[in-house]
Structures are given as structure tokens and as C-alpha cells.
Length: 480
Image (tube, rainbow, N blue to C red; front, side, top):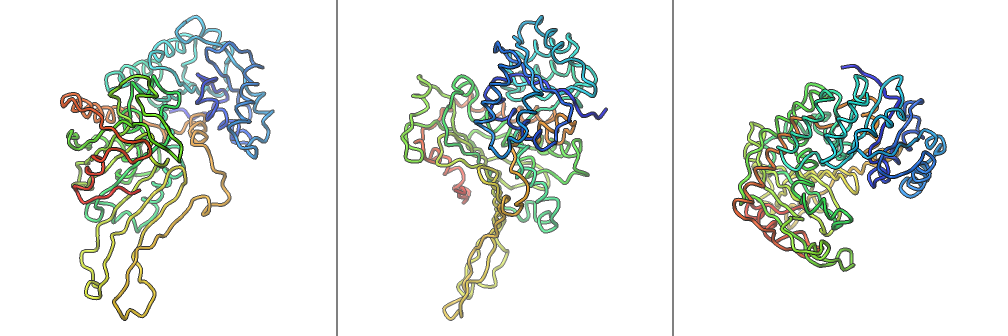
């Protein structure tokens, strides 16, 4: 594989919400810190009929809205890197004009492609026929990459016809988050954890991705996707793989992704009785009344806005350890966290003195706050005349406090920089995507066969009561 640092970046969907909120602010912040190739030129393309100056004005407004003032240094220099070419990706003839706008890169071209699934094939054909898919070109693909295994394969086949796997960068922005990467450091750079990271010492794992928002302008996409495909298929399964993977030989793209795909292929097919789906109704979030899903949508729907799953990994390390996954919209608070619940001590020497032990618990907070908390048992201060007191106390590491110097980054900063520089470690390989879809499809087939319909829950609650029962029948309580 040829390594090169691109001096051209082509951004599809450059006037869209993702670009304005995340991509362009990330690029500006990187440029301000001198992390981008000094000679890089950034070309935006979309259907919007803009010229270069019109695009720069749009980007300036976006930066002022979405990028903190202390990260906008050198904004004028960044804006001068930008140019724009209108394009209807469904029209092949437009790609020749786009190719002329991009020009001939000296070192290489990176492409960020965020488009509707129906436009993947014509876009890839257009790039190939216009000379924008050569040996010095790599491509980043933003989700959704299909709606099931079959459609995902069609998209991946279309991309593979023009780009080999070592130049395809499938993006899951969760992998760009600092705490997600810190999970690997926690596991594999600390001797105390790895000997305990198995079924002999861990009782269960919980992964929660909770949102307070509803549809938020994603009406058509979300009603077609639902919570299972929108969140579990990508973000949550990637988190599960990082928690459960075996130690890779080294921290590089091939070895890390080899171990993740082994986990994904070891996932046991889920029984319908091990899942709960829900759909929110009118309620209140943060003291503010919010409508139900059917009201926001404007019609009845069977799309799930909440899903809870009891998953199992059938391998030596994790046999018998349940992984509880939970995600939903209009939940009480926004949070993404991983909870590793250890088993209790096999024998407590303090029972005769009236003390009760509580199993250790590791909580890894990913958003909105980045923190790691390990609960340990400690003696309650005192003379113990009425018994020996024990209490669970937290050892907490808040990332911004522990590392006061480094700037808190947008996840896309790292991913865009890795795309430009050619590091695939934090990107998803095709066999991972297909293993994820295979598991998700089997769940959806089970729902269809059982004609499962979402249970309603009130906005501002933690989902249907059946989700609580899913865990509690195993003696497990969701961490809230």
C-alpha cells in the first residue's frame, strides 16, 4: 500500500448539515493548528448553485456558528483554501467539470463521500470515468451504507469496482471519540485489567446510547431506518467489539480490525424474546413538553425509536456473559456509556462483622462527558463497635481534568486527518460491516416472523417497562 499525504480534499455534500456542523469546522480547527498539509486545497461539491465566494461565505457563517472562537485562528487562510463546484451526482457529464476544478494533485487526493444510497453507484462511476479514482486517490464513506446486508453488498461492490479495500475508509464517527480510543488504552496498557477481562471475573456488560432528541429534521431517513439500524448496527456494535476483542498484535489497521471482526462473527443469533422495541409518546424532556413520535411523523408508524437487546458472544473469553445493549430517542438524558460489571468476591471475610460487599463496576462515559469511574470497596471510617463498615467508593478520572493541555476535539477531526494521511485503524473494514449487517438482519427477520410491534413509552422515561424486565429477570439493573 502506497502511503501519501493528500494535497487535495474533495467533500461531497459540502453545503449539507454534516458538513456545516462537523466537517468544515473540523478542517478549520486542524488548519489553525498547522496539522493539515500546508499546500492542501479543499473542493466542496453539492447541488447548491454557488460559486467559490458564495461557498466561502456559507462556510464562514458555519464556522462562526459551530466552531468555538478560540479555535478559529487563521480562518481567513482556511477560507482561501476552499473552492466549489456544483454537481448533480446523477448526471454523469458533471463529473468532468468537477475533475477540472479539483485539478491534478501533486501528492494525492482524498474524497469524503456523504450521499444518499441511491447515488453511490452513479457517483463512483462518475469519479472513475473522470479520472478521480486513480492510484493516488482514497475515499471516505459516510453512513448509511445500505439498509441490510444485501444492499450493503451492492454499495460495497460498486465502490470496490473503482477502489481497492486499502483505499476505502468507511466512517463511524464514534471511533474518532477520544474516550472510545481510550478504551483500548485502558484494556491493553494496564496490567491490572487484562487478566480480569473475561467470563471468570465479569458478570455482564451494559452499553447505553441515549438521546433526548426526537426526529430533528430526519423524518424520512429515521422512519425508514429505526433505532436498530440507525444506532445498533454501527455505533453500538463497534463499541461492543472494542470491549470484547482479543489483544491485537499491534495497534495498526489490520491487526485491530482482524480482532474486531472475530468478535462480530462470534455474536450469537438473538432470540426475539431477548429484544424489546418501543416507540415514544408525548411527554416531557427537561421540563419541556414534547410530542410523540406519531405526532412528529404526522402518521402512525411501526418504526422503533427504542431497542434493548441481550446479546451473547460465543467464544472462550465471553461464554455466559450477557451484553445488554440499549438505545433510544426521547430518553431522560443524553449519554453514551459502557458499564463493565465485575463479579462479587468469592468469599467475604467481613460477613460475620455485618459488612456486605458490592461488586466492582467500571463505567466508561463517552458523551456528553468523557470520564472513567471505577468503584472499589473501602472501609467506612470509625471504631467499628457496631460492626465493620464497608462502602463502595468511586475512583474517577475526568479526561479534561486529567489532561488539561490537549484541546477537546470534534471526533471528525481525527478521522479527516487520518483519511488525508492514510491511516485506516479507526475506519471500518468491509468484513466488519457485513458481519454487523448479518447479525442485525437476523434480528429483523425474527421481529417480522413474530409480528413484533413497538411498545409505547412516555418521552422522558427510560423506555418500555419490558426493557427493565429484560435485565431484571437476570438480576441485573440498568445503570442510570
